[in-house]
Image 1 (tube, rainbow, N blue to C red):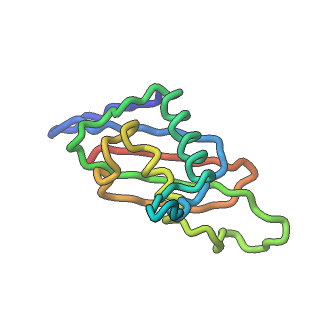
Image 2 (image 1 turned 90 degrees about the horizontal axis):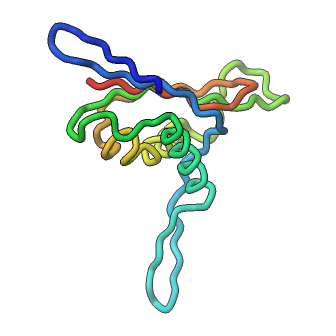
Length: 142
């Protein structure tokens, strides 16, 4: 487990740092079906699988809601994606958008890293190219 407690003169600030070796997946839009006049909404399979992989990584690291339910949190997230051979630019100015990657991580962390993603009050995120796709997270109590 990579939990670090930092003491200052006012309170304890807990920090969690983790790397999840998986390809980042953007949160898919909810789908709607009509069956016998009833509306059914569901999350796309690819999104559910991505959230499951992230949750499993959190569980394997031994985290179980390490922050209190009313603790405001700051999240730093870096999404490393594979660089296509045809791309010359240094940064991935492309789809999917970074906010959709974040939505997947935020929803996957519910009831595992935090009670609800509404606790995350500050987010700093980056999307970068790498030969090793992964998601790096740093979570700090405010």
